[in-house]
Image 1 (tube, one colour):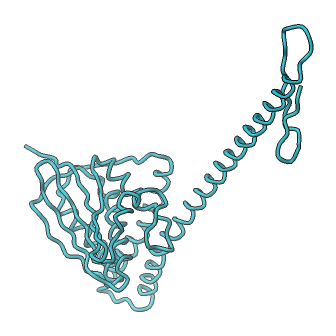
Image 2 (cartoon, helix red, strand yellow):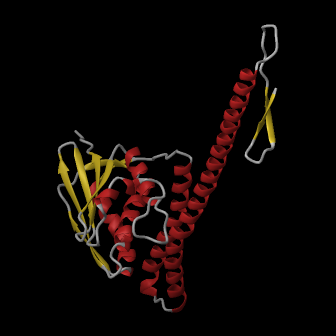
Image 3 (cartoon, one colour):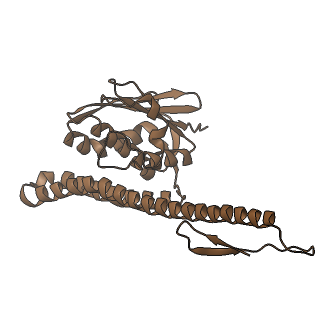
Length: 277
């Protein structure tokens, strides 16, 4: 038998070597056993380090998830607070419906964000999709998000191709749309223009959301959709685009980014067109 020791010289195991042949172990056998015990100790130590690393990564991921929720939820809460203060102190009868709708939209966004994050972390995103006209859906989205854009001194300009049918979960696609528009506003801190356009291409329709910000380096065009990847934002961990990509892919669609530094960024979403008789 030969002890297996860790780096602190603590015995963590025993290596036993049995010999069916008669006679004693030789010095060479003992040297081999000692060498084997050293390798066994290193293997055990490495296994412990790997387990510690995995535990650390799990904790870190949970921390990042919590940080994402705190940072991304903070903004709609603050917007809701401003609307509530306006509702309490300055509102007139004519403003009531508009302000309440804005307030509810922000609060619904908080609920949807938490639900989407929870579903994403579990690897399950369940869609409740219906066939809908794309242009009308986008018009509705723009109406809902215009308050956020105006708050950030941004203007949304639309240019649509022919209207087509797509199969969407409007609630979940709006989460994607809202996140991309929010990113566009963040990319233009002094304000700017967001261009929303569609292009019909036989069996697909391409939706482009383009900002006039600083752009995204080419080296990040693929990485930006990875979990916890954030570009140019100190107060976010970058889970939003990863969730966006997952939701769009669950719809049978794709998303990519095209960008030239200094010329803004374009997020291009492609969906299958539903042809009806």
